[in-house]
Amino acid sequence: MTNYTPLSANEVLDLVPQQAPFRFIDEISDISQEKIKGHYTFKLDEFFYPGHFPQWHVTPGVVLLECMCQIGVVALGIYLLSSEMSPEKIKSYFTLFTDAQLELFKPVNPGTKVLVTGEKIFWRRMKLKSKIEMHDEQGHLLASCIASGYGVQK
Image (tube, rainbow, N blue to C red; front, side, top):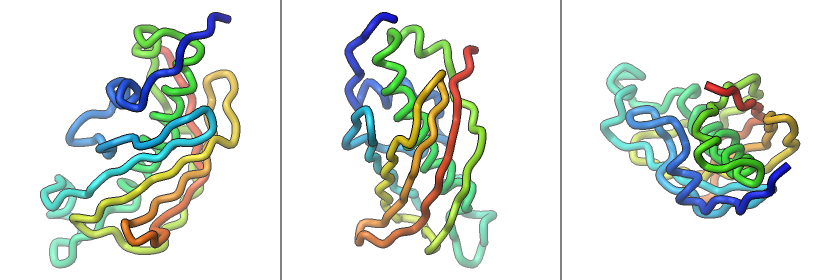
């Protein structure tokens, strides 16, 4: 196996395949072989708010899970792969989610900036399982999950 230099946080973010309006990562602030921290602000004009509750906009739980998995599984997985293959080869893969156990604790309203932290539970044969938490800027726990995904060649 060839060893490569791990990518920077910005290089990882550039390789995340999800794009607007379905990318829920603004920044990766810390990344290593064991963990990741990323941020996202749920903008007032997100495409899902007009229909998810018109009188009181709340971020859908599936979108919170997507945000958590984009950071804690997809981005962390890209970083882990970057030690094993070139960025060009990484581009030939995408992540399929296999399972998630999610707990939601507080509603997330438009304008909320969240901090998502992911911690690797295991990584082998292109499968990553992570413990992921989402907090608001005041440090309140909004959601937590254990989620898994694996890399599939396009």
